[in-house]
Amino acid sequence: MKNIYSNIYKPTLKNLRKAKKNIENNNLIGLPTETVYGLAANAYSDKSVKKIYKMKKRPSINPLIIHFNDIKLLKENSVFDETFLKLYKAFCPGPITFILNKSSQSKISKKATAGKKTIAVRFPEHLAARKLLKILNIPLAAPSANISSKLSPTCANDVLDEFGNKIKLILDGGRCKIGVESTIVDLTGKPKILRAGFITAEKIYKILGKKIFVEKKAKTIKSPGQLNLHYSPGIPVYINKSGPKKDGAFITFGNKFKNGTNYFNLSKKSNLKEAANNLYKIMRIIKKSKFKSISICRIPNSGLGVAINDRLKKAAYK
Ligand code: TXA
Ligand code: MG
Image (tube, rainbow, N blue to C red; front, side):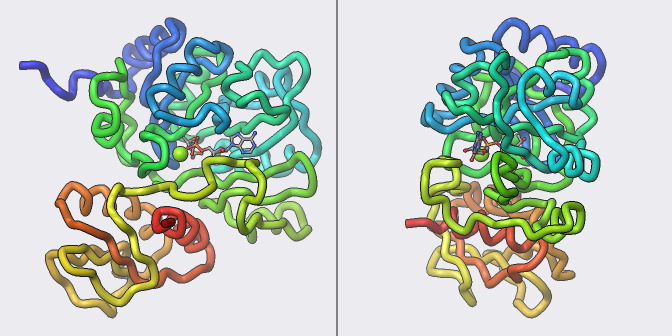
């Protein structure tokens, strides 16, 4: 019988070389990062990037994040200024993505940036991702490794659940330290947060010394992935509730809720980092346990709670 885990590999040097070969041969790989797992391809190759859209069933108008090891390869692909450098020094490598202007000589596939004049760049902190980017010396286009509009994967097995053996190789970098996607900051005009994440508006404000705008609702298709239903576990999600629906599960936070077989606590200690880390994991468990819906209590809307509420609102979109 075929071993279903045969495409999951520990990120040893030998396996990183195997991953490199796959990328060079225009194959897709599962890439661990500190936020969520990515579905990665050679960002210079149209052929590779096309495979991402196809496998994820992602609309081709929704651009991908391009992952770099450091600033070296960025220089020939984008234009950046002091504001970027300040944030880069403060937070990178780490869970933040910058929208910059693409440079005219950029070799990044136009399909990866969906024909836009801008480019989303990120410098992941996860050691396996960094090692791979270093030996590759090619940037990686990598959206979250899930079918479009579904939950992001936070461990190698989640990637396997999404795509099975359609991906030749998934690097197993353990469970993601953060567990929700990176903060996206648009630096092409006045700095603006397009997607909340671990790096909060307050942290950015401290570095820049000036207020940063937070996009409440994307009006134009600036970040198409941020519109409508997203981060969906595939069953209805109800937010700000005080208990489960019939045959449904209830996600709680803090210690004021009772226990029960259909109760799942994001963080008994009311710790928002722990809650963010458990969010997708618990939603996946609930879905697999065949509950019919997910109700969830109110989550404080401060710090990392902003990112959690952003994801929940979109998961609950009707
Ligand atoms: O943490 C993360 O960011 C993960 C890991 C794998 O790095 N990646 C991730 O990628 O969340 P994805 O494709 O699931 O989300 C990227 C978001 C999308 O909403 C997309 O619309 C937006 O970034 N985006 C990409 N390029 C953009 C651009 N040029 N302007 C505005 N938004 C952009
Ligand atoms: Mg995604």
